[in-house]
Length: 147
Image (cartoon, rainbow, N blue to C red; front, side):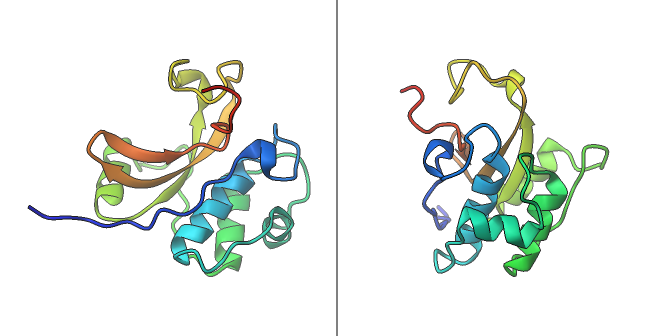
């Protein structure tokens, strides 16, 4: 039997992040990825993420995530919607010990698993590892809005 160990960084809650909760999932997921990469030694502020991405507006994009990760020394690949990168590729990477910041369509998340079932838009999450039941997901809206 092989045991794989993963670093589990502190997660971020959108309601407690100090910015408008409706628009900062990308920033929160990016900050958790930076914590994961640095094994907890880096813990940038949301303002630091904004500065690193060069984005002080409401919305955060995949390019913004990429720029912030690069600014904090996190090596990464950027895959966009039309790339050939598929779910099995992501699962293989997670099983190998990688992690990812992913933009998901929250409308596809069953209400029973949703941090906020009233929200159905695009949403950034951080996938930390592959476990017995699938990926360990850090969802910034799983922040006490519901049990």
